[in-house]
Image (cartoon, rainbow, N blue to C red):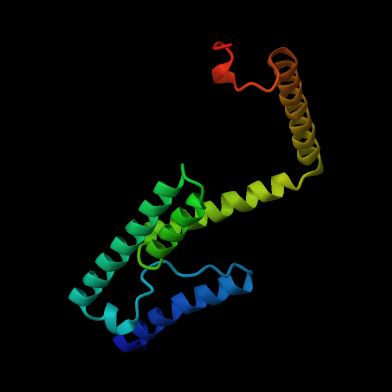
Length: 153
């Protein structure tokens, strides 16, 4: 005969069995949700303050990354670092990082394809030949004169 405590104990075991099954299949995905320390999560106001702090710090890092995009610097890396900060606390950011990781991995695999590498090498060579030809025509016609001073002579 099942009592209420037996059912609750059985319900508590089921998610662990599911995780163990996933681990056996080789899918070692981290759980979604907050990674704040337990004492922070257990107090609602402290956890809310923690989340606001994480959001503000992540926003500052993402903002810095956006500023670095047109400037010389690792803009995209800084933006993804800010999203990584958000991902320590927010599920939506964790999902964005998973999607981004998957897409980057797919792009890297595609770039390693010999046909794609050959195509990229050919396109780069053709582009460099065209740019070199245009630079040669300019030098032949105008010499070593800057383009903005050509009409002044």
